[in-house]
Every structure is written in structure tokens, then in C-alpha cells.
Length: 112
Length: 109
Image (tube, rainbow over all chains, first blue to last red):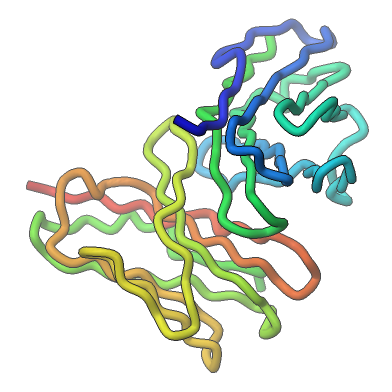
């Protein structure tokens, strides 16, 4: 089945220790998104790729970086996680920009 | 005023009832509208896109009211499994995806 996969599902890191979250998709979609979601809040779009074009949201902190080495994979790097970065990180894809999105199961990040 | 607003609820509804909730948006030039469902600690899942003419999928009906700038979701014959948070998403003319904070629905037996 075509799907969006995120690894790991749970990640524990220490304050300030870099962490990388991974997302892969078998849908062959052009667009991949990274969201941060905290409890009882809407998902917050961090950035997205349309093919190789990177689009950063204006309020995304520099602490968050992303890489998309090919169509199937996208990575979220958090360079120096703070306690406030503890959240669910969701990867999504869509065939065209800003259309129906398909989400992976998310990675729950804990910062100690 | 928030760009996309939803009543957070919770809406407590008996099984079998009909429930409806709205999502208002501020940008009159918004282009695309979607409803997602999110279960506790799970990812959002697309429920339905919202078309200008309205659309129906089984027990679910979505409507768009451009004049009053809101979309609605109607659930008929509600099931226990409909309990979830329902999020609306608006793609506006500034090429931004704006998410509502969601409406929590609890279906009671």
C-alpha cells in the first residue's frame, strides 16, 4: 500500500543534542511537508518542499532545518533541541501544492 | 480575528444524533477547503475536500458558504467511532495553508 512512513515513532533526546527525524513516502508525491503539533493545538507548518524547491515558513526558527535528498525521503534536523521543541512532528505529502495531504503517523519527540 | 476559527467544543452528542459544526475563515479569496479528522495522539486523516457545490460522503456532508465565509461539516446518524477532533484547513490566496485548532466531538452511547 502506498503510504507515508516516519521514523522513529518516538524519539528522546537531551537538551541541546541534535536530532534527525525521517520521513519517506511511496506515493510519489511532489510535495512534502513538516509540521509541529503540540497538545490540543493545530498542526503548525514548519516548511515544505515542492519537488526540490524549499519553502520555509516565516516564523520557523533557524534551529529547524530540512533536507530532501530525493523524491521519496525528507529529513527534519533539530540542531539544538530545547524543552519547548517537545512535540509531535508530522510529515505529510500531497500531489500538488496545498492540496489534499496524506500524513505519516508522526514522531513524538521528548526533550530531557 | 484568527484567520481560521473553530469552536473547540467538546460537543457531547448521543449516538445516532446529527451534529454539525462550522469553521470560519477571514480571507475572502481563500481557494481550497478541507476537513480532517484526528484521533487522540494520532495523525490527521483527510475526511473530505469541500467543493463549492457542497459534497456528501455517506453520513458526512460538507458545505461551503462563501458569502458568510465559513465551511460546515454535518454528521448524520453519529457512531461512537466518530469521536475525534475535526480540523478544518483553508488554502488562502496568499498561498498559505491555515489550520483551525479543531473541534472535539464526543459521541456518547
